[in-house]
Image 1 (spheres, one colour):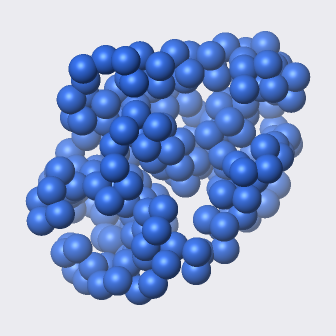
Image 2 (tube, one colour):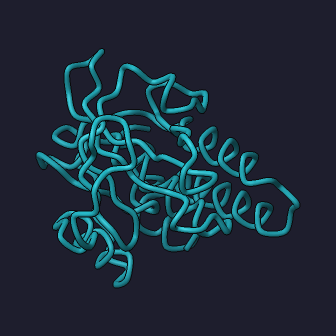
Length: 196
């Protein structure tokens, strides 16, 4: 993976991917609690730059794989969330404890994506976000209005600030299917903008 990043994106991208793989290896070998895993992954990815898809990929909406995100040295909110989600899965956080949540970010008056972690099925989730670096409970994020959420298996339509109503399988999301297909095939896109 590191060699591939270097071939496609360059030496600095390979260094970022190497740091990511070291984080994943350390996380698998360590006795980190789930909260520590959330914090380390959130901090790691929040170091990257926010760049709109139209500038970076010259597409209205592009969901980058973690390798593409690290290769490009930045991305938009979906890219931050996707990288965090898949890294946390790799570190042993169960899929049923996480959701990627599509929200309306009131401060920016635009749609946004975050990762929600539920310690138990009935607990208030905590939010991993690239807009606010610290992890906060959803109840402390009045700047976000949830619209829908999904994980590897399911899709929920959100009702106010509750758990939401199951709306089927995550496979109903075209962007999710395209992302997973690229991850399976290993196909990598090149950004149109150089960030470094």
